[in-house]
Length: 115
Image 1 (cartoon, one colour):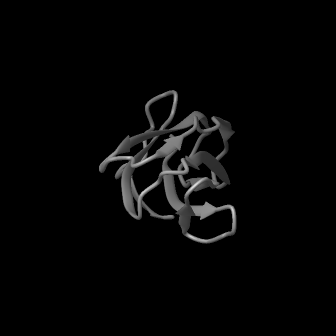
Image 2 (image 1 turned 45 degrees about the vertical axis):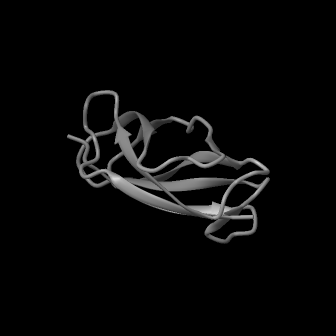
Image 3 (image 1 turned 60 degrees about the vertical axis):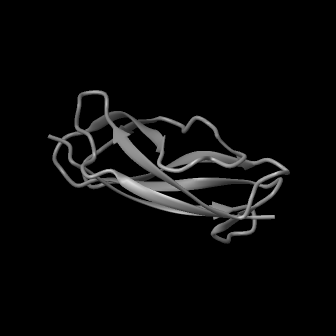
């Protein structure tokens, strides 16, 4: 049975952990299958834990197949409007797999924003 672990790193256009007004970036999620068997159709589901303050999230790519012992990266595109305020945005990211082998616990990610 597949077993998924994950870690998330926010990286903006300049490789920093701050998203500035008008920039694009991504949340990179490293997903590893530490169980036996292949996980299929892995997706990231994002739930905001604070107001998004001018931030738009794109759909993450789906990992179609992750064999036992392998690691792959899911990317969630992030875009900041020109009116983004300074502060932090918190969100929960759940990793879901087609057959129900979900990551537990969820990831919590904080994005720092600035003008």
